[in-house]
Length: 441
Image: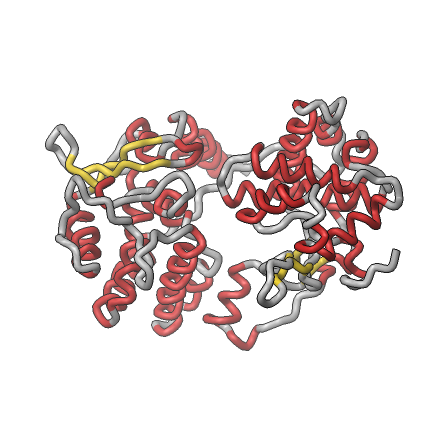
């Protein structure tokens, strides 16, 4: 068969479309219409089927896994999709077999391939899309720039080159591609869940992933305590001053100020403030507690677990009320008020996590620029790689002086106080360091 619609490097063609299009793709897969809507993918599947590989069936099982077998969390969807898809492409191209025929040796060889992939299938930059729509049609064509692996530049490096030391820009080499221990652990976890799905559906006879992990030559055993990333008190004070000044000068930044202070003061994950398919954070989720002692916020957190977060009076007065007034609302929310907490300023629709991530990054950039302007380059460098989760960690760390460990665990939504203690208090680690520092020569 002549492959006319994609170039030779597409030996590794993407198999699944964007998350929201996967149910449609699954519905089309076994219909004649599939070849019209996904012409390049159809040719790719036919090529492998001509070699005796049940490629279309493999893709159908993968789509079933993604559409019905996983949570709706975007990060989980993408991570599991990428891993299962790469394994499938490896089995087809490198082992000439269906993923359903993969054995222990195949899993081990896949991990070798994952650890050091061929340079030709590593992208220099993150590719936004796997497929592109043909103009004025429903046809989905492969994005020829897509690769199974991406050489992601650390955010800290990008911020340094863009905001702190612009003259240090350097090109990255594909030789720099490295799989971290965390990424490797995540790969095993994703593969294990995928094969459990296949096993439960009686499509494979055994899940070999656990056995492969036991004998993995790349995994480092043990875990060293890593303290949570936080902003020091001086830097956090600068966040408040910088964002307040920006909002005073330009109302656009009222949203940035509100999001950043809310994540920090209320110990929220950014997903807990974002629109999700099953939940919209609304203003009436803020309410006075029935005890009459103060305000609380109702949150749906990780694992769809509901919790109440206490809301300080200072936050009500200086953050929530100010933000609501900027939106043209009353200072305090009504109990029947169903407007979204974070609406789009253009459409009014509640914002999803990608949009909130962009808002946080813009806020961080403002602070980094202010630090550089104030000749505090070292401080700017120390937060160049900061993420929204640093805000939650900062709030929790500062709250250790005000809340006991049980209270803090409830605020954070930790299932066990032990988790809170291990992350934020780490008494065993602190004691060992203290004792170690006094050892004699």
